[in-house]
Length: 440
Ligand code: FHN
Image (tube, rainbow, N blue to C red; front, side):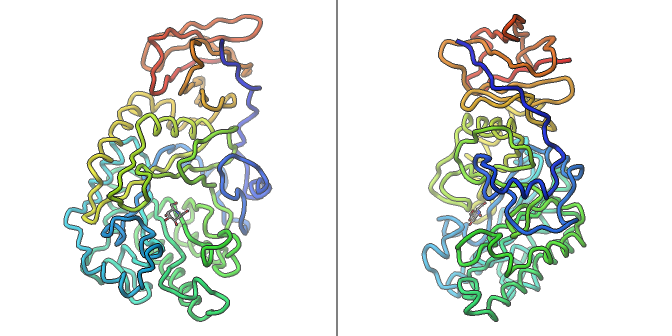
């Protein structure tokens, strides 16, 4: 039995602007959270040509690190355990990371084959990882025991390593009762909003070129969507200020404004058709929590590679999260797993980086393809039992030759039903078989 692929894929829609993307609001692209949802204004989203570098990256490191690493039960500890803000703030007295070195993080990312990083600058608990005059009560890593500007150290390390620098920022801050009742406590809510505008300005103004702004937590009182809270945050005003300092920064869709890309969060498998707009899958290497957690539930190498190729074959980037321990150290088992991913990408990265999806639709659970110039790459995560052939649909081009990427040629048969790729069993890789076809 051989796999028969669905109809050929049309032109990859690289030129969708924000308006077309808003029209996708009803689209049922698997896994995207509220695609195109949010307010928009001309000039606040990047044109497709300014997104191409971002779409080339494919693989990045997400980093959740802050006071919540100390209790080691995840970044929602303060809220989940109903710890009063003043009590929680005492953690800052203990937070003196002895072994934090952002250059080590950057090396782990590079060794994993990652091309960009997104570090949490402030999570919902309100603790800022930089010297923040705009922080309510100066609750930050400069004014407390650590006395360090971790955002400065991190952005410098990114650039030194040749990685794109992304910053995650949570507009919401659990320390403000007005967050939970913005209409009932408008003055307190306004204080929180003032902090957000002041802190975003600090992050955009004081740390050189920032490549990605990753908002998270626009939604009010943990209800509704980020777009539902646009009346409060006024994201068009906020991001107009962002663009003043960082005109080409790529902004995610969680400020209540339509983003420059869409997000799919969590460990659920990526399925369905190619998504014809920039999008990103973000998930946890350790499934227990985004922040450091002593409960280890690491993704297997097979799961990581499967998630990566399923994402890239549908046009997305994958942002894989790690949670360093209270000392700023990435757990050794996480480093080792990421190094295994890097080894795979050293061999097959040509089929991932700077490619675009297609030229045909993926087959859920079995395989998908990417393309670049006169090459088509096929990622086979599973062949049907006993099958060693793949039927290719008409892709409007002729397959002139093919091989296992980095390996031996494969047999190409052309007959009235189309083109068949015939592999030998020893050419199949249980992790993922990657083929390179030459087309013209
Ligand atoms: O509440 C956060 C959560 O702690 C984590 O930061 C994730 C990462 O994308 N975002 C929110 C949940 O969607």
